[in-house]
Every structure is written in structure tokens, then in C-alpha cells.
Picture (cartoon, rainbow, N blue to C red):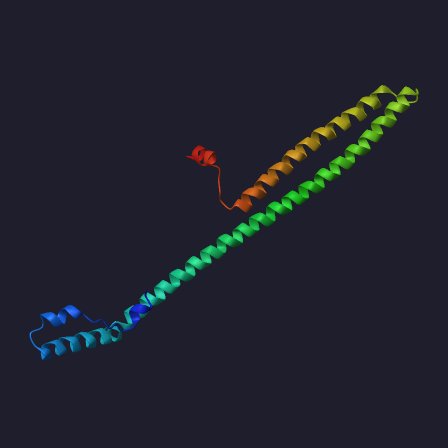
Length: 168
């Protein structure tokens, strides 16, 4: 719209011909109207160009703002994916440790049953195994939390209605 305002406008008014008393008066009014419409962009050219420049700057600002939002969304998704992958690796390590702790507990119990070990070693092995099981549960919880943050990053600001009501 700002760019179209820079160009001359021609408009014909059929109602003017019915009200005019003579043909010369009609031609004179039309000529002045056409001349005014054609010369107005020349006289207001600087102001009209400034309006065009302003509207283009606003358009560029909105485009940059949109690009920034898109970039932030991509960054959030990348970070959430990376946190989830790291958490999966941690969970795998804890599961490997649990397998080793189970093997150790079985061997220590076997030694105790055969009379070559003491019961304190059995209790320690069972305690370590249980601690690793609790750690795996905690790591699974963290993995689920990272997955929720990934889904929120993908959703891009779509919130549950209850969350919106609770924040207010």
C-alpha cells in the first residue's frame, strides 16, 4: 500500500458531469483534478518514500524476529535431543554396572554358601546391587523428563490449558 501511494492516481467521477453547467467548466475541473493527482506524488515524494522505507523496515524487523524464533526453536530441539541421548548412554552404563553387580553378588553368595567367604561381603554386594537399581530408576525418571522437554520444544509454545490456568 505504501508503495502504491507513491504513484499517481487517476479517478473518473461520473457524478461530476451531471452537476456541471457547461462543458468547459467540466473539462477545467477534470484537468485540475488530474494535474493535482499526477503532481501530488512529486511534491510528497520524499515523505512517500520515507513511508515506503518505514514499511519495508518493519517488514524486515518482523522477518528477523520470526527467524530468531525459528532459530531458538531449533536450538531448543537440538539441546533436548542431545540431553536425551546423553541420558540414554548414562542409563546404559548403569544397566551394565547392574549386570556386573548381580554377577558379583551371585559369586559372593556362592563363596559364602561354600564356606570360603563372609556374610558382610554378601550384604555389601546386595547393597550395591540395590543402590544401582535405585539409580537406574532415577535415571529413567530423568530420561522421561528430558523427553517431555523435547516434546515441549517440538510443540513450540503449545501449553496445556491447566498449565496456563495454574500460572495465572
